[in-house]
Image (cartoon, rainbow, N blue to C red; front, side, top):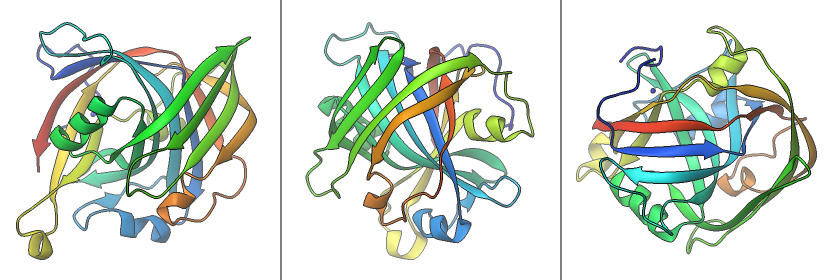
Length: 248
């Protein structure tokens, strides 16, 4: 995730390898004009049939290890909770993160410092009981707007693989991310833009049923509380390779 379709063969060289599991995609349609101020000027919102989408995604990241190195105990596992929308640069679609709360302090530092991603310190638990998954989080990052989260969901029936042109494909099959880093001429030129590229096999999605949802993550960004029930997809675990981060 410079073609719009993902690479289907495993890359020979990657910066990092990870495993994502216990993941839930929760999305709401949102007025594009509400989200436009949250993106740098060079990025355009990626819309589906004229509609912007806002996502909240809890999951567990494990087996984290840099290229050619073993996983380091205590540093190779974290729970994450991100707020995201979708953007394009030069026709290439990707994810734009408003925030990424995570549990590993060193991981938060590394992601903010090396990858220019808006990671924030948080306490997060994510556990399974009788097939149901429950995530609970409280942001602890100094200087950041406070936010809390609690959700319980039950993964269900297997769904067909998302196909290009469908909403499920638009929301989940993303193989690039965008982020912004500091620029000495930021007041004139705006922040530096970076594009990260990921590799993984296509998502295996399932129906999901919510039994609990309490969140102030979206509101912490100054956005209105999402209206209505979210569009939900639970996802089976998969292996992810971070291929590159390139200044654009």
